[in-house]
Length: 98
Image 1 (cartoon, helix red, strand yellow):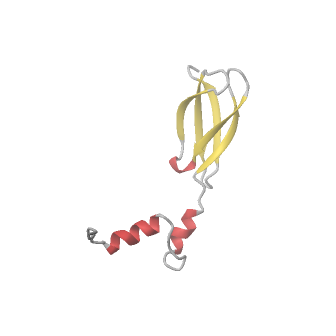
Image 2 (tube, rainbow, N blue to C red):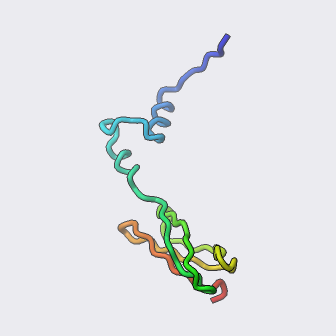
Image 3 (spheres, one colour):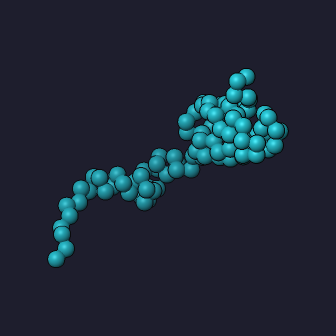
């Protein structure tokens, strides 16, 4: 015997919309927002060894600053990310104690 589950139709439609399981005529704004780029890879040069490294940038967080180790020499780099009004991200790299 299978248990019965009560389905909340409002919640189901919300989850369907969040998962992108809807027709564009239902909510064109949600379809449009799905195409917004939130992650990108940026290539920068390490401030210590000069090697090109790839970092992943989350555009949805806006301007940010964090420390990430160089993938080549393992030294700490401070990455400053600036996101302009068009959603393009610019990354600058500096020494941790600069």
